[in-house]
Image (tube, chains in turn blue, purple):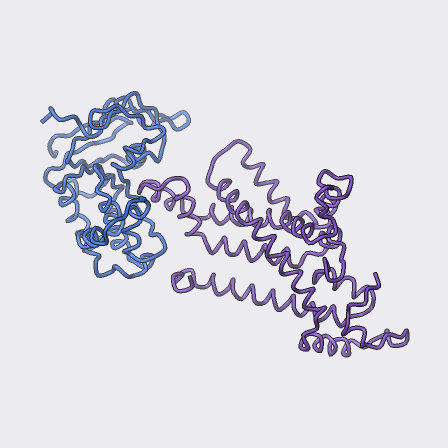
Length: 222
Length: 255
């Protein structure tokens, strides 16, 4: 199991807000094709940690490696940018249709892409019937699914989801929860910040807990 | 000064006793000028529109770029820059005219350009007047936008220019408002155009400088006619703005 290098391995993560030390993590190891839920109290730094991994926030990091290759997180390298996608808690939709939004990341690349890729991602997220709808008019659950499709279409090695179900309930929430295992099976690693018990209880999901700035691995439920 | 190119006006009674023209007569004459396609009148309108559009064309890229940069990057002295920028909004245009006059006059740094009393001089003045308005309004539009737009673009792999394009596209109504405001400001400005342009008939006479001149001569018809044109422009531009802003929602159809 541990003969393959971890997807992302960070050592000595420190994040300071003024006087307060928010994060003081010895080690964070994210394996390939694995899923993690990251729990912790409000303000414990879960989102900050996720944003640090996504290169949206700065932190002091002693050493970092990606698939065994040493990397630096500041400035955030292209290698990581292509491999890691972060999805906001309340995703914003760009002007245009749902299909435009899903194709956003593909369009940024200079290389041509196939409409089929976009279609497949929309089918996966169950939003193919909304393809030509104005993305800004969608419901919260639909926006979350567009955001997931928009990230998945780029085939990232690591997906960072910030409380994907926090503002949803009922069927919308169930639909998001049902998508998570399919992400893991497609070979991506996922780190999910959440409070959602149903997400935490998903099979094959490893649990990380942030408390007092430190990270704890929890092997099984308790 | 007495170049008589004002063909239609010269047909009007011009003796001392007739100078006390009734306002109703002036208004009537104004509409005659408007609807008979008076060459002098439309020449003045054309100079105004041409210089304003040119100025806007020069000022917009720089202003939108700097507005975006100031709004989206943290740097030392940022608040001072914003303070100066907003103060620049209330600088009187005659002051900008004076500054430019000194720079462009024969002893000035740019005297060799021979831009004083030319349309280029007017355009330069209007660029200086438009820059703060465009920059400040773009800045506030970008600042008001959700930072998640930029972050989402970044995490999906956008480079610096692509992030800027994405964010500006999302706040395009604010940028549009900036443009329309800027156009209105340079079109209606008198002081700078008068000082730097010199109000030369057929050359640098703009709508506003012509109104000022004609009124001071006691000849109201052309002034009123030009005023009608100016107001019509203001109404059209603001109607366009209103339509755009009322429909941010289904923006795709407008575009």
